[in-house]
Image (cartoon, rainbow, N blue to C red):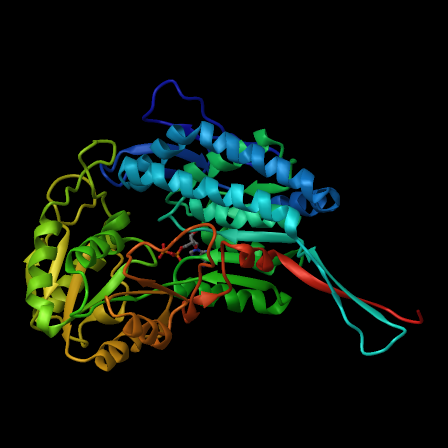
Length: 483
Ligand code: ADP
């Protein structure tokens, strides 16, 4: 790609085992959501390019799979080192194409790099089993083998971490991969794949295709060569991809939408709960799938919590992420901003009150004032759907059971959070909540060492931790008879 707005930087094209460099043909225009300015043009990959990337991954697989675990681990370590060495460049690229403030982008680069480090280590621990046999003349071995060629489709909200969270365990397990990053934020992904190549990931083992989902998606899902698809994005697209993968019976890893409850009980440390709510709700301007979407506050502390949260939210500063004082980036595009504004309008029409914010920020970019809504009720749109924006709706509840029922009244089950100082309640509520992840007295739960994933319509499988490797391996049982 060519970076348009940063002078003196060299462009490069799509990486598979060849480069696409024709900037005169069809291109993806990458725009800065804080200003609307063109950041870069990336030549569009076609269905044929995607097919070639799959073939390159297929050709590269036998050699990559045959390497020792220690060798794959060393290559991943070298990739980790290069990501660290280029962290400023990657973070700045992310600010430009995605909009998050530089401090958040820098933290994401560390998070992204940590997946590579973690799976460099896990690569050497793909242990099998010997299972005691029911018959004296038999021995049962179980080995873990790489699935084969994998595909990854990643979203725009974490342009670096969603790439490494899939690519690092795939490569560690001995799989090869074709990545389709979001067309809104392809530059960070391109940089990461280029660094992987420089680190020694062989040509064809890690490929990236940037283009229209409608051209690329069907090739990846329809190919019998692709044995596994890992997708992070909306539930709607996840359902579609699942359907498209059915004829070839692919293994699937799906990280889909959430609708996270954030419960504040009357025995909570309210200052900690406010900070947790800020971290969970307003990180990435509310555009994470684990963002608190529904805040339930016990009636006895509702007013107090609402007041403290409003004061804190009023301090948040929207703006272009390269400016040091900015804490809130823009939304990714106009459609995202309109959705959040529609949720606010719907809530107000049904009786909610805007305590802070509530409006679009005038001027260029897709900025929305960080918002707190009071007197929110279950019938409002913001309670049923992910807002994916900086809007915190506060609902009052009376009893613990009510809070649990409200929290579970959704078809989603990704993250949930609650604040309480009562240890017995902490265990009770953590066990009663239907979600793949629970934050107790914390608003930040993600890390490379823990299993990230959801229940219900929030997805299938786990990413991160040693369990994340399972997605990219198959168990092979070998029975030795006649001994
Ligand atoms: P979001 O709502 O977060 O933008 P999406 O599910 O629309 O999430 O997008 C996540 C990823 O899925 C992006 O890389 C996007 O290009 C891709 N995508 C969207 N629609 C399709 C599709 N029909 N087939 C394959 N990929 C798709």
